[in-house]
Length: 147
Image (cartoon, rainbow, N blue to C red):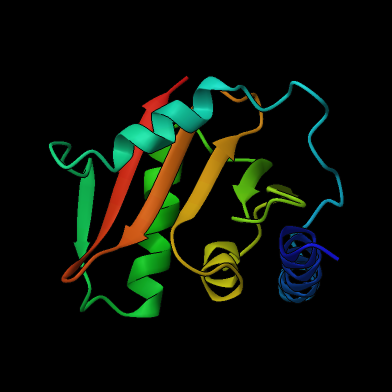
């Protein structure tokens, strides 16, 4: 077995395990639906990549001294300000299943923060807006764009 093939199998196995962990933690807010072919616009990935440009500033920031409740309120307010108020897609960072559809419920963003490592990407159900949250050294940062 070639080294690349083995690496691919190991990555797939690891991602399946991570996806199972995520879905277990997010069970109450997942709809179980996956995006249809073409539902996630290709330009989305270019837009998200632009958020990490060293010359781009975050659209909003919150001190990292905020408690979990303050972070959840701020996150949900930022999502609402950018038109993400109902069912939306949440990025998983996994190749095998990059998007999960979630239905907001009380405390839902806290569950997403606990279940999905690194940055948190929210895509409006109609794919017209994307919001990304990232924890930097002293702040939680939010980046948003219309698509």
